[in-house]
Image (cartoon, rainbow, N blue to C red):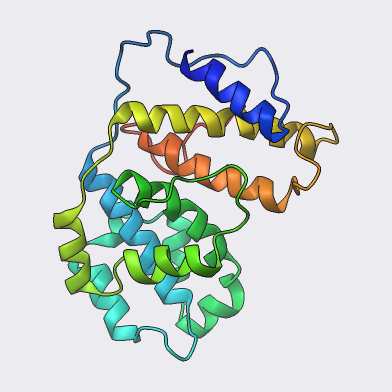
Amino acid sequence: MNTRRRNLRTLADLGFRVADNLPVRRLDEDELPELRPQAEIVGRVLALKAFWLWVDIHPNAESESTVREMIESSQLRMQLTQSELEIIDLSRAEAFAEHGHLMGWKNENCWPLAWVLGFPEIPSVTVGQVSGILGRRLMLEWLPNNSVESRQFAASCRLRASGQVHDLDDLFYCAHNAVRSAQLGEDTVPDDFDPLADGGCIHERRHSLTWMLSPGVSWDDTDLST
């Protein structure tokens, strides 16, 4: 069974109803898709973690100097989008007050990036927002919290095979199609699935997967059409 048929069957079993005319973006099953260089993937996930740390002003949060050093030592500004740069150039209090809601969505972006670099939990189309035990393992324990840990992290990462990334991206691509239809009022997602909240998780996780399979394309220009 090829990737698309397998993914459609998986999604149908879960209660997703996907359009039957979605293009298959990899026609030759023997051809390996091209994956973005490891350094760019590492840089992006570190940048997202630094952004997350900057907006996090809870009592046990890392200090401002620690986060700034992490950003500068790994040149993470180069891996942030223009809108993200504008936020980390705010004071931490302003960033939290105005953009604290973005922290959860950055978790969703981080999960596939971390998985490709070795995090064991496979991104899921049915798990809601990353939180609880999974959130702590991913954001607080597995991803680095300062410049020293960032260097150790970059040296220890190992990319998964590009075929694995492609297959998971195709699953999210198909699920994203069902989500978009549900957001337009169609009955295309499981009964207990929120098209906006849960659908947003699928959107953000897919963004990371598709970006990693789009060498040379910026984060903001990643094609997320369905």
